[in-house]
Image 1 (spheres, one colour):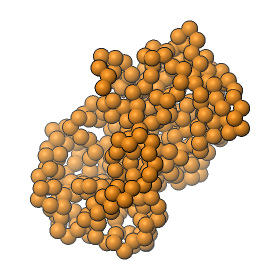
Image 2 (cartoon, helix red, strand yellow):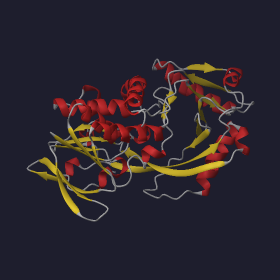
Image 3 (cartoon, rainbow, N blue to C red):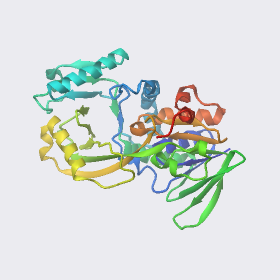
Length: 379
């Protein structure tokens, strides 16, 4: 069996790695450098619990299972490559800065309690005992002990190395022009390398893991076209003293989140913009992030800005992932993860590999098939 994977982000790479471990012949095709789009732009939060919103109850079982898999997934990846991936599980806090913020947060916390999530309310004093450099006038917060983070850029590097060591063929700077579909099943890919030479790669299975670019791949029947769009997010990183960091936990504030890395980077994100593939870093977006971060953590005022960037989350019509088989035989979908790509990496790889090997979609991903959109009237 030959498997071609379109997209070299964490989703495509993790699927390729798991397949190669089983002895499957796998080739990954990435338009640029593997992992340098949404996977590189992410913050790496593993927040299956604290990030749950009222419209996302259906995603919770998948997210919690993936979060449960992350410790072993990270440890195995580190053993396979000798590279650290920055997995941390010290918990995550969401804080309220004003009385109004506290009322909104209590509403969210009530939802968490109804869903029986392990999240506890903290007084202002309890929040500050954990993170003393936060705004001393804050009103309270919640603590999720099972949420944490991973360094997504380190994960990318480790997955690339793991894939190559396992025998995957990684084709970077190679654009997939179209999927070849013959008599209702995939036959392979038409690709073009950076030398502008076109080639055909035969495949028994094609996995669509191209993130926000998934809809642009040509050759698929209309019923297999994907309702995926880019959702722009601007972000930036400040530089803390790693020996005396201002933060140790991931913090969700009213208008931003803050993710401290062990090397002293403090990531601040992220805007949510429907601007297509516009890569511009705007004054308004940067100002909003810095203002939100400063209100939560006043000490950032003296920190140097190290980097600013933007990425494109792959958003589906309902902002839930699109996973599993399609009406086109041999076409498997692993896209539309929106803001949860890093979190859902282990379970997506596990479920997609099970689907490919068994020929039957894993039960956990059945609710996320493309078929759920068939009865939906297009916007």
